[in-house]
Amino acid sequence: MEQLKIPKLKGKELGHYLNEKLDEIADTVVTDPDILMEFAQKWDNGFHRYSIHNILLVWVQKPDFTLLAGFRQWNKKGRSIRKGEKSLKILAPIKKRIKDENDEDIYIIKGFMPVSVFDKSQTHGAEIEVGASDLIKGDVSFDTLVKKCPIPVLIKDLGLTNGRTDGSMIWISPRPSEAAMVATLLHEWSHVWLGHCDEPGVLYEDDNRSIQEVEAETVSFIISSFLGIDNKKSKYYIGSFGGDKDKLKGRGRKIITVAERIIGCITA
Image 1 (tube, rainbow, N blue to C red):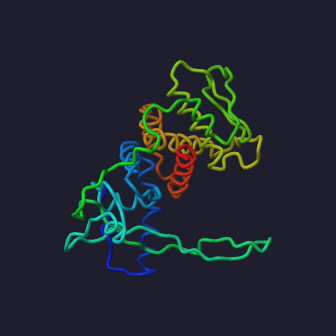
Image 2 (cartoon, rainbow, N blue to C red):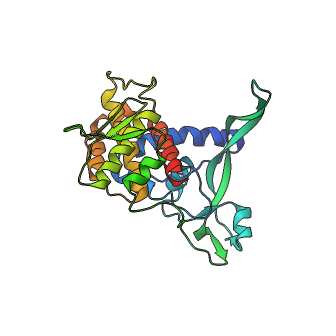
Image 3 (tube, rainbow, N blue to C red):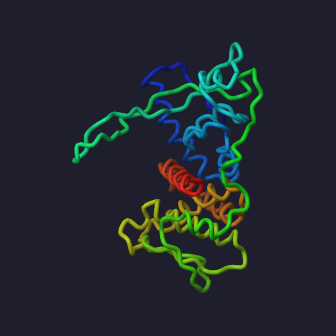
């Protein structure tokens, strides 16, 4: 993955640049399973959980980052920024408060602004641990995932088919490998949240079906990698679609956003 050098821009200009660059980076990442797995495993990054999109931005600026925080956060942790270190740029939402139809306050996102963070290696001072032990990692049981899934899940012998969904229900075939059933459930859950079943009861069979399958499999692969599950099937599937990268252009951020939503649901 080519390292990103941030131009000398400020304010809205830098925000627009990072936002546009994020689209390009996301599209590149979701079409390469090796890069995708390395990226997914970077999200467990310590005492502050940044969005996957911001982890992606930091990763292309500093591939060897370990633990991120802003200037004040590092000071609160007893560490200072080393002299001469350049900050890493991420995006923070610009929120506006409005009234909804019930006259209740709600917030809408009007845009994004650049924010500076630093990696632990750019600081010195009090020692702190790297990593977040409270996140679910490694052996994740199928039953645990079923309880976390907001869509009803039914175990049913589907023959050669591992799983299917119509948006209102997910069916999973019983298999000897629990990890395989986990990956299948993640795949079907992804179909629903990717909007492939806009109307409950329908999984659209159209010209985009092959792309929909790649999108769902890519989301499943990101989550599997994050959880520490070795998902070779997804890796092969994504890799074999590499010749059709243009078909996934503009879909990278959507894929990563859905993966983040599901990870958030699983780890809540």
